[in-house]
Length: 149
Image 1 (cartoon, rainbow, N blue to C red):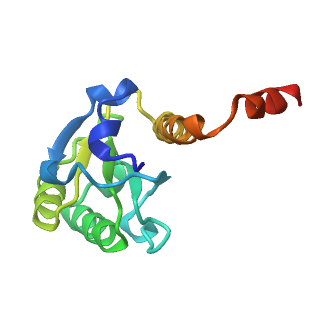
Image 2 (cartoon, one colour; image 1 turned 180 degrees about the vertical axis):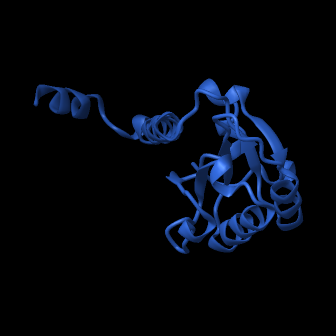
């Protein structure tokens, strides 16, 4: 049972995130989270189904934003999660335009959503789903045996 961006956005602190581009592609599958500091960090196949976390000031120029989206899309990333911190103001037009054209969701994260918090949220949601999926298949004695160790 795959976890999608739409489902992820309905959990925990991500309820506060805003989708600024690629709304039609929120059914993209999310398997992991990766932090990138520049567009050239995005590499296929490592980023396939990955939600890419980036600080906006690291891709402030329009050419960097377009390159990030192009590489993320080519790598099969689930989307780009943008963390805005500090006082540097960067326009998002190039990022949003490129993402809409290619079909890649872009999220603006809540201020307190750093990489570790986002990764923890995604991984715990994935683990919860996996447990729910296999739970009915496991016999009660299995749990007793596991807890005995």
